[in-house]
Length: 345
Image (cartoon, rainbow, N blue to C red; front, side, top):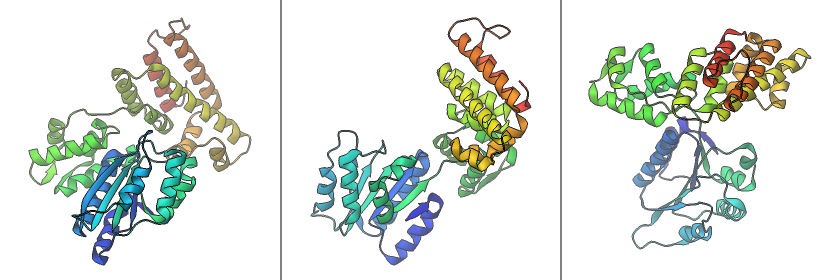
């Protein structure tokens, strides 16, 4: 059974009333804070229902999968109900692990709660036999990434838990400072609860308390460029430069997005519906929503010119000269980001 993380609290409340939990819970996602909180909530519900013993297994590349069978079949002198946590950080158990998980999902033991934590699976892994068996037998809690556009609202909801609130500008300020880092946002929200009493927080109070704890993600550049959000793209580029992100990787992300845009522009101009183009070019999620506006803003000629600038930046990064270009490749990347926002090369 597939369950969004927002629905976990209601599910566990109903299970508490019935006095039973599902035998297997899978927590899958790439947001560490939300995944930790989801697993904590499941453990808390289990403790209330008498699960008093816990064993944790870390399934790395050298993990002996017979340990899962041993843990499941083991008896305890002190607890009738037990929790076994299986942590699969790589998300791919291999042939032996896949077979062990599939067999375990087929007949989970009584009086045993298994919590499996793993990252968000790619499409092929999600279609594997072991993942399908777990999804059929378990409560599969999907922890989705909080997109940048939804981050201020998420922060507002977390402030409300502490009986605090903040205006739109203050929420946007916090979101800018914790770019992509929910754990940092959680810490800053906790700090605000300690520093100020319940009630509405002013922008000045927030600015005084919140540190710049951003974790800049190179792959966040693509949606910023598609949205035409020049300010955010510049902030990301500066953060990536300061944090020492390799220039070739940043350039590749920018050039690949421009190349995808140009292919989509040519296909749409040839009469293909955008939905078909999106499937062919593997465009989905937030990028699929943002790309139509980008295609209206950026012509094929503009995209071709920006790709030519990327080629010049590659030359600069290798220590070669590029006519009519600044000697600083990061400055040239910033110009491309602004051009994507303005719609001209």
